[in-house]
Length: 143
Image 1 (cartoon, rainbow, N blue to C red):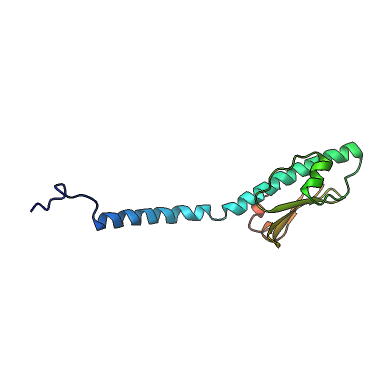
Image 2: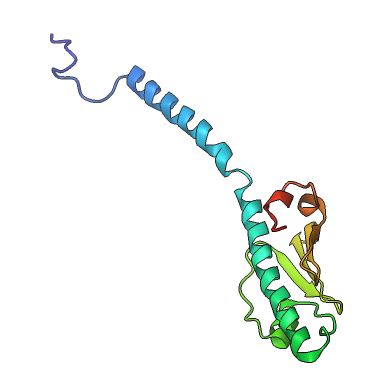
């Protein structure tokens, strides 16, 4: 009988398989924390981009008409009044404007409000919950 490692051995030993599993587990434990919270950061980035476009369109509307439009309560009204093509919102944001030029984005999951962002006519950001000053995503907002 030949018990050499390189002779008639086919396949992997239990020790080799365990070493590979441990190495993969260690690598996963290093990588997974980097990805947690990325969805919320992407949601904030989506809102910032859309709200910035609405804000610029409101300022242009004000320059051309001498006043802001009456309150626009959804993306369809915003699109029709300001000429902004409505894009697909992926992270549950609903947008509206007020007669003073403030843009509001409300992030919802079903009927539950996750947080709100506001952009004033002067370009100042504010928010609630995770998006409030000092909140989890506040440092990612343009100041």
